[in-house]
Amino acid sequence: MEFKHTPVMLEECINGLAIKEDGIYVDGTIGGAGHSIEIAKRLSKKGRLVGIDRDEEALEVAKKRLKNYSNINFVHDNHDNIKEILEQTEIKKVDGILLDLGVSSYQLDERNRGFSYMGDAILDMRMDKTQSLTAKKIVNEYKEENLANLIYEYGEEKFSRVIARNIVKQRQIKPIETTKELVEIIEKSIPARFKDGHPAKRTFQAIRIEVNNELKPLYETIINCIDCLNSGRKIMRYNISFTRR
Image 1: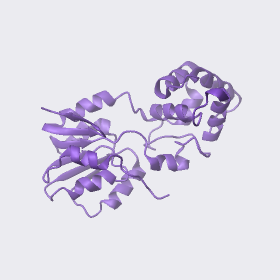
Image 2: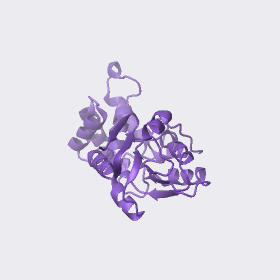
Image 3: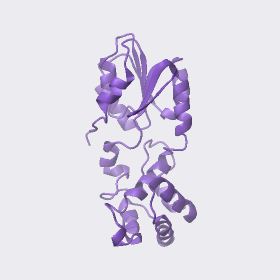
């Protein structure tokens, strides 16, 4: 499947970074390189861009799309490790950092990745396919209370306890292996009058966040990013910017 991803708030992000042609910048989630291409266009040969992504498929696409630029470091890692990444690339401080958080449209559309509640695929949801924790493992091995808590906290699903209870009942009969099987359990757990949009969207969001540990390290990540910035430069998380003074 072709990697198609429209960069969100592209103009706002590029303007917010206020790119210096000889500066050093980090795209913490390079994805399809939509933002990175615009950053690279504005850099001189003395400038530098570090592109990070957990998803190896996304990283390969970015390499192809940025093949004409020689001043880019591609790193298969998580932006949570930005300090270590910059140390390994012998960079002390940078002039701007962009973090495009969450799942990409490509990952949702690529059915065999198991992110989507549409269609049928093996429960996976890993952004980094080298990690061991998968959605299948969470659904089949987490205790009922832990399942209910994560579905409520990360998905704001008010029927989280019913869903968790029915997941446990079903997996006692046979392991839950596919997105379709999970969707069917969720659909049966939520009364028709309370269904707003697709009934599985909140539960799938919650499990995806847990699989990829998207929220727990975020505060520390922001602090580390700020520590890596030159004075007066910016970290962009879409329309939220933090400036070091």
